[in-house]
Image (tube, rainbow, N blue to C red; front, top):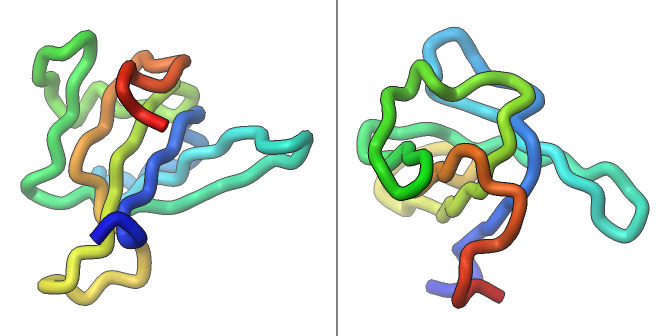
Length: 95
């Protein structure tokens, strides 16, 4: 459902050693915001539209993250479906 979809455009500020969780930060209305997402086996990681290894996920990297609540997995945070590296603007056709 649409209310279970989360879109984040910002910078990776935290990444666990196993590459299973990341935190992304951005500024909204003058305030710093941070969100944590899980990285699952099916999470797509791309740069310029091409798949890349998860090892390219680094703190300080600009990203656009699409995440959703996965009702089939018990997680305390949304799970990323797509992580687009190097993004500094919203992709076309997104709100």
